[in-house]
Image (cartoon, rainbow, N blue to C red; front, side, top):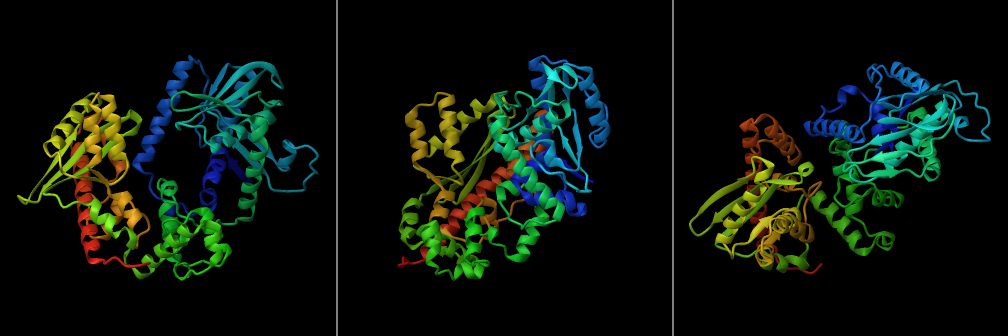
Length: 502
């Protein structure tokens, strides 16, 4: 028997390899669940509870656990037969041999001996007037998601659930619905999404039935929270996979493979004209030089931007290094950290403006302004667009005069933008931590991260355990010092690198 769940289809849409490993992988090779993921699951449940409360729903819930999925599906079916108004956390299970015949016309009978069980888990099943095998009522599926927009994978899952429900109750529901983070409601166009969903299901079943393991491809943002990340990364590392080269997207990777570029060496030696014609001359040059930097384990300066770096990074007596910690779900920037480096007096001091509660954001914003205004000519170095975006947001939110905001922004220097535009480094990505580690800087808490700080701050709000705040402050200070370390390295490297022609 093969089991196919809506969660597997969701993962298949995002990463086919994950669905394969969830089915056939060695469970001992899975990573431990990250605290940030546990936080998201907790927030998702809170969001569901809030939606149910706002809709004023009186629901019935199967008592069997999710691991006892067949018992839970039987309970759900019994509740549907009774005609209860609302079912929460139900399971829809469907057994099939010739599964295509369940929802496609003119399908020849299959002699397949492998049974497939489709398992769907809509958040809610809502009773509506209509006609079904149960009587003069039908059920409509509702999915409550934590996302902010109706992603295609959400729509596919909602359609899959509507299809399974249709087979069980004998009629396709008139709609399938999504409720997202802000309780925005979206109706799914089932006529449009049904053929797409069926094609995805067919592809997924084909992969699982032949046990065809998809090729590894590391995408930093998409893969980061996956419990197979370490397993896949180690495999990619051992293969020196091209996906570990910054700038190699899935589409670019497919094209590189199609023209015989399969290794870092072959990409670094690239002279193929078709590459420039298909992905553009600039991108071709960037990929080639990025591969060359990795192959040689040496940075490569974009010579035409050498002078730009020297002009952008001023030699000031006092420099400020700025980094922010935020809680996105609260729309809160709770820590504005500034490292003040006084080169004339050979001193430095870290100023952490920390909001111990969300209501204190206004206070720390004013404290930040008071500090940076003490040094009106000092450059403010940071490592992302987020810092400038936050200055604009907080300035508007708290009524800071526009001229003051423009003054701060005019002396802000985004090192991430400067580095990615000016130099190729022998690294797998251009995050602050990766670059600072590469040049020798180390964080005091090796396991700390921005995501972890979000969890620590939420923990602080709940427990008032000051050790959590202390860990956040260490991490933020290290971020500021890493930014300084990286800026100093870039200045030294630029000074040592003469301007040459490409």
